[in-house]
Length: 482
Image (cartoon, rainbow, N blue to C red; front, side):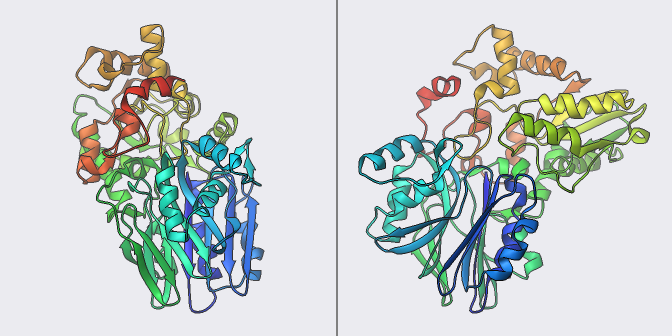
């Protein structure tokens, strides 16, 4: 999971680039980077694992001068990558996941092409994308060839002497949005980067579309594909509340999710409604509005220095953040029956050990967990997320109930089956909560407001998006269990 931002101006673009990139800090915790083109390329990358992007780059951006630039906040790879190619030098940032990265890297190595960047023992996927693009006849041809070669998804910004090329992945899993302020242009993963910088949404890039932005304006270089499968998790968890994708605001979707959870929850009596901050707050507000129960904050997030506990790569880091960032308020918790709205249950360990335990310890009378999405069943194939099927709470439940890993989990996907009910009961007991009720797939889709066929729901349903060449359905269970 990464966030990318680009800026183009007739004057210096670095201030907009600096703050625009910083507005993606909720999408990554490992590296930040910027590249600017003025008289020449200037590039800077820093680790942000122990500090914030702003503090690391504040002095850098004052020294970096240029009319066009790109930036990234990354959860894994160091970027931007600089490459000297046959069609000139360029810098590149990416967002997505290349599933067949090892295979493609081996193919390039066999052709005598070397890699200089290694991230945690593997090839840097942004460098891999750059090397694949450099095999083309020109930049546009190279991007199209790269799209054809990869399994997974990759949206990118490429900075060259021509300007900033923006390319959204072919099925649109990850968004890219064009913004404008008079003669200044920007492109972003998150529209929340625009308002405070005075930028207005010009348009949303469509899947497979490639555009070039420079001082002369915006030019389409490649038309869009006719298929769209944007990640539904953007609205449920990943995205910032002020952001919109395909014109649909995140916070409004979360409120609708909460309302739908409450509509199916008429059989419990509670005293207060709460959300696990920050991403659970919008869902809880919707639940409180629909149920007419008071919204309160029994757990508050100590913001400075603590990022999202989902994004760090190691379980140890995730647990430490989860332990330290949420502070319970005993005066609100003690003696109350509490609904806790959560964006999702991935592994379940943080919810159990660092959220539920804090509530019980502070005197909660009942705790009712309400995730805003269905049980997660399959690791994401299109962005950096949970990488192992064994981590997922639902899979742990199935393994315990069946006594082994099973390939066909279809009965556990159906909310009407006894298998599904037993799975939820197992997770409820494991979390040590009063009750657990997941959002239904149909309700989640309705809350987002796009047709189901335009959403990627793979991590909940295991169904490969239409025209997707990255997963063979008959190998889903086999690949996942490995």
